Amino acid sequence: MQAEINIGLFGHVDHGKTTLTKAMSGKWTDTHSEELKRGISIRLGYANMSIYFCKSCKSYGNSEKCTCGGKAEFKRTISFVDSPGHETLMTTAISASSIIDGALFLIAANEKCPQPQTAEHLMILNATGVKKVVVVQTKLDLVSKERAVEHMNEIKEFLKGSVAENAPIIPVIATQDVNVDALFAAIEKTIPTPERNLKDSPRLYISRSFDINKPGTEIPKLKGGVLGGSLSQGVLKDGAEVELRPGIQKKEGSPPEPLKFKISGLRSEGEELKEATPGGLIAIGTTLDPSLTKSDVLVGSVIGLSGELPETSNTVSIKYNLLARTDIDNPPLKMAEAIVVSVQTATSVGVISNLSKGIATIKLKRPICIDKGSKAALSRRIGQRWRLSGWGIVT
Ligand code: ZN
Image (tube, rainbow, N blue to C red):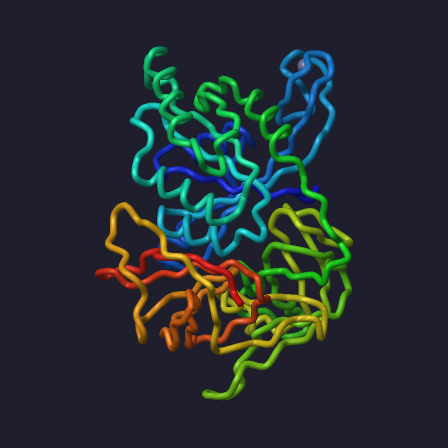
């Protein structure tokens, strides 16, 4: 069943996200090895789970079989969205915020709160505009009861004045499955599935692109290219005639040309769908030549109905704010400075060509196709690495 909501996982890398996701869903399906190699480029990991409610014992769980022996009722399927590493998580949380409906914010009890990375994640949560937040106090098995209470008070103090000020704080011991049912209850109460306007023009941002054919397959047996991504709005139907932008550059130096094709199959978690709506990772079968989709070359592109996508552009203007980073010096942006712009799943290096009234205009090396109003993350080079320095709105 397709997930109906995406919940982002926030928190320090060591604060137990993998263990918690395993405890909640019983599995962790996505591996991040590939994106670790790719540095700052956008790769989202998804883990789906279904929530059930047992009427006999009034508790939530992840299975139809309740621990009390009763039969639980299916509530909904949730997709947890994560990104590896501190820098990429912050960048993707901003750039992909259009597909994030709520957040779990993990804070480990075995360290004083806030740790610098935890403080930065709260700053990012404020920047994304994601308001439905559940705070999870993790690793309680590593501290005394007194320390756990003290830590809870540190969390409350830390959240004051932030978007998560009134968020419920749920203590859990993920390794021993303690209080995970209370976490499910808090998610159900605090992060309801938003009402979607399914009449909006669909936008699906590509985060995966493959050639599924084995080497040496005979030409008549070749399968079309496969794309994966998430819908931020609207509906895509199997069989629809769609367009993908920016598309393919046919000659060096020439602008990319949009690709037009027919959707030949939609899947989510291995199940076939007649139509896809926002929530989770969607795989799309296409009639495209698989050589065009191999090795993630189309990551960062967008799919929509023919004629309904914005123009592809080499420049982007962003009304921006700089972030107060705790670990790096982050002076004002400068003319001609190199900047990495991340919007939705697209990442492009560029150079600042104008700075005026809080708006940065950036000339991009790789053109992008994005709607105005999208959130953008800006990274600058500090030492040998690209570091998240600001965020803004595409104008
Ligand atoms: Zn029960």
